[in-house]
Image (cartoon, rainbow, N blue to C red; front, side, top):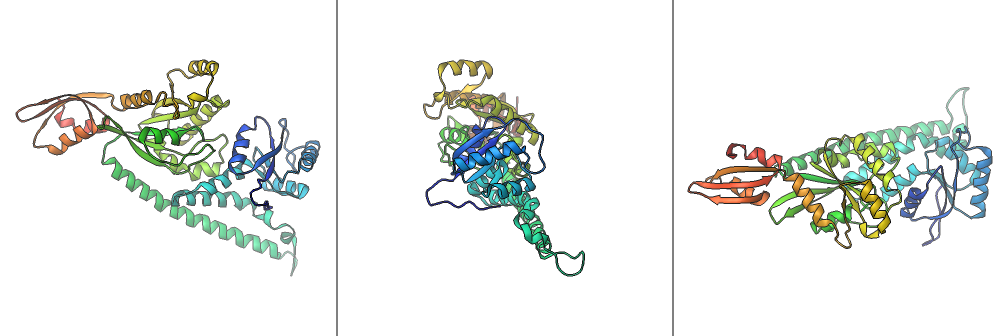
Length: 410
């Protein structure tokens, strides 16, 4: 791949090519620190073996790139290694697709060991079929006896083997990290708290919601994929009943398959959670499409039976007409704003109502102080009556704690 050179503090100008709305690609490009120098929308075409697009459209794009003095071309669809090589030879500037843009963003965002390993794995799996793209004429050189391999071909095979070995090593390391994650989860499950996973399109405000609800300081910024790592915080009701809120990596349309696989472990929290908070950016013109993408990803990872709460976030940025339309479109959704604090109490109440659905009566003898402490710490106590040999409770709790109290239920 041709490297992009730029003067310090001068953003690279990118020319965007796509079939439909380019707003998402523009957001990705902005997040990568580039600026949009030009764009073109094209009709669906029958793939051309040389450039994917037809000759006329290819010449038009090259002309626009030269006139607008753009420094790279970015396609809003996947291009093959051959197409990429041909475009770069023709334009003499870097050319890549949204897949590589997302990979570069993920690479710059990875913070923990797991996220770093996952990004490395996705990068290697993406680059493997593009190795020949790095050699050019060297791979066509021939020497020695007829039919023997040229120096370029030998170099290509050596590098391919090195990448395959590195992929194997990273997968082994990831397996260790995942086992550690499972151990941590088992430790957490000893404290029987329900889990609510915040899921949704990238930049919908999930981290902001987590922070304002739990008074935490998880990294947040108005950009795509601001955080890649899972963060879990405790949300308490009146200092007693608690749930765990878990932030997850944001979804995006046409997420590269290498990243769906590589980041599956960061989405495991969504699969095993008791409740899914599907967070949508109410101010986005693509909110309906973003919702469909989120549901599609949840289906792909197997999070299909969890209870769901739809959250229309950034409600303060929406005009009156749009509020009416969205309220009709997403019935029973909770409208929130982390800036004005609108709807946050309603969201908390909804979370607790779902997680504390089980109202039970039980009698716990004083000698079982551990269970009494658990009830007072983790349950919502409606009624408490101290008797001669124990305490009678009427309380609301979750299924996990109800199972622990089974022998004491009246």
